[in-house]
Image (tube, rainbow, N blue to C red; front, side, top):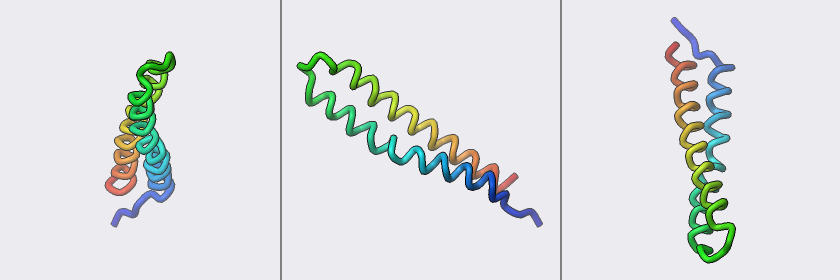
Amino acid sequence: MKHTNRTVLAKGIKHLAGSLPLAIAGPVIISSSFQNQDKPLFIPILILGIIAMFSAIYLIFRGIMIVMKAIFD
């Protein structure tokens, strides 16, 4: 009977925990930038929010893949 690799599982949970702040901050930054469209920093703040959202999505998928590898491999 196989057992779960706890070190790999901890790594996957760390990825998922790291994605949580980015998943919250990304939409907040984007909505803040759309409320200030007349300011000169509109585009850089919008890009920062988009990068935060895509990095959160990447970390979520990466974390899920690592957790699945720890459980089923």
